[in-house]
Image 1 (cartoon, rainbow, N blue to C red):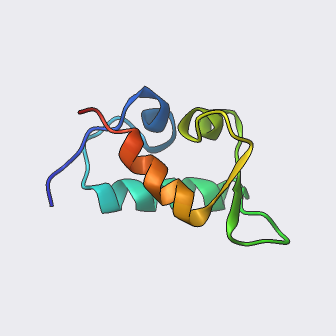
Image 2 (tube, rainbow, N blue to C red; image 1 turned 180 degrees about the vertical axis):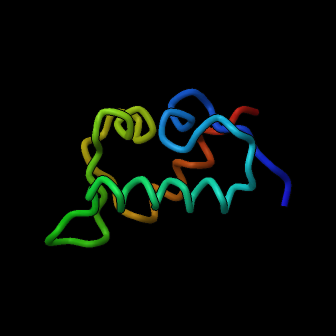
Length: 77
């Protein structure tokens, strides 16, 4: 897989090293789990802290599927 470069918002969460998209997603999940951002009642919902709000385009929470799609929108083209 070709490495991709995260933009500034995503780099704040996963680091600014170019990695394959799957690795970036894994790092994002690790950050979410480490900081307890998965909703306790609805595990499919991810709550945003200040760093993630930039990745989530200002939304307070997104579902898992949307979060995975958002990784693609935060890559340097």
